[in-house]
Length: 167
Image 1 (cartoon, rainbow, N blue to C red):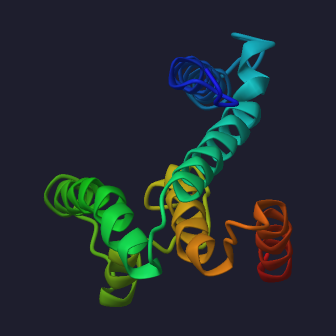
Image 2: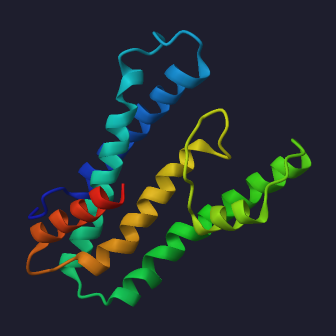
C-alpha cells in the first residue's frame, strides 16, 4: 500500500481515540474519584489530537488525489457535517424545552445551528463537547481556501498561522 496510513490503520486509530475520550470523560466527569481509570483517563486530550490529525490527513489525502473546486469541497463535506449535527441540536433543544424547561435566546439558537460554541464548561454549557464541532467546522472552512496541491506543507503552515492568529 503506497498510502502513508491505510484506511484500516486510520479506523484503528479512530477506535483508540474514541476509547481515550470515553475513558477521560468517565474518569473526570462521571466519577468523583479522579483516580478511577487512571492513567487512561488522562489520555482524552491525546484522543482529540488523534481525531484532529486523522481528519486533517483524510482531507489532505482526498485533496491530493482529486481536483476539487472550493465550492464542490463545501458541497460535499458540509452537509455530512451539518445534517447529523442539526438533528442532534434540534433534539437537545426540544428535550431542554419540554423536560428541563430551559428557554434559550434566539441569538444562541442561531449560533448553535451555525455551529458556533464559544465556551465548553461541562456544567454550564449547552453541550460542552460541541466545542469540537466549532473547531472542525473552522478547519473545514479554511482548508480549501489555503490548500495548495503543489505545496501541501506550505498549506499546513498557513493553516497553523491562521489558527494561531485567530485563537
